Length: 223
Image 1 (cartoon, helix red, strand yellow):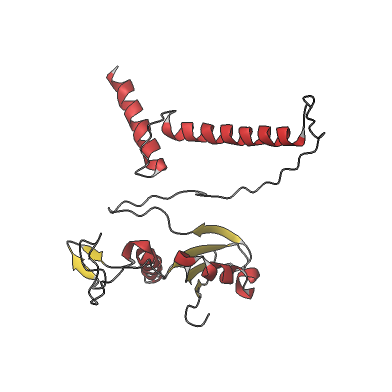
Image 2 (spheres, rainbow, N blue to C red):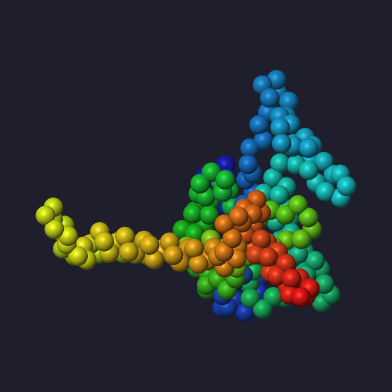
């Protein structure tokens, strides 16, 4: 819609036939409620959310983490590369996409994916998007985070009967398939959390796994 456009910027590469790099971010932000008398609601905010306050080397404001900081990082990184002498030219084209409405359904990205511009791209070699927010200067990069894996399962078999047990019914096969999927999920969870049922879910699972690996190395070193 006109009030929330999709903004796309292209940094032309040396070979425009190569699959591109897509740096995506969204410029809409989560709400920050105001009190009825018109003042900012300070609940959860250590500083007023609408002032863009600079303090102790940080910027406090609505949307700074989610995710205007990433929007700025993309632009600043390209600005610095472009200002080199001689100017840096990427091997492939780099596209920056700034989409709206991510917080309320993702209609902005849907519009971009259905556009003629997106369909004209020679493929995407690498796409970066937002991830886990960081309260420090350390940023984590996740490969294929929340990658969907859609499958359709069709089961056929004899129907059940009230007087006897019918083997290998369609429902029985579907239940077996569901159990295998849950077993796979448990295996992946155990790989992250070391089989512990007391995993710390207050932080990123990747960070929890890294911490566990570090502790295991420390135990080995003390033996």
